[in-house]
Length: 175
Image (spheres, one colour):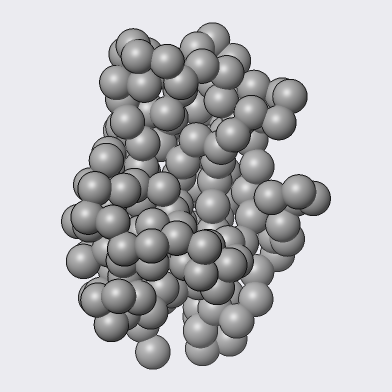
């Protein structure tokens, strides 16, 4: 049984709040410290890179990403991803970076996604430009804490159950 955890930040830093995942990984990297069972990587817009890395055996994935604005920019959501729905609705795309495309690419490569916890933040702006909007920037420290909490919960689940079969989080309505 694989117990290692990949923490992956995704997003485009040149599109405002879409760079949320990268900013969280950068902030997390300053505080997380070395750990033999956790690998923290900013994939940026490298969807195929993430798909290829997911071919390695992982116990779980913690994915940090920007989420569509549902009326509350800066609001953080933590949930377990429905991998079947995500990869079923997307096609193989060597240049795509949304999670559905990454999981579809992984499936096309013959891989299977590990159980995945998403730490996401509703965006305010995704226009051309570098830097996060104020509400999304203010959510970064909370997101760092959420990632650390998710990693701890996943570790506990992997250890206690011999694999991550369930998680304490559920989907927020409408996601």
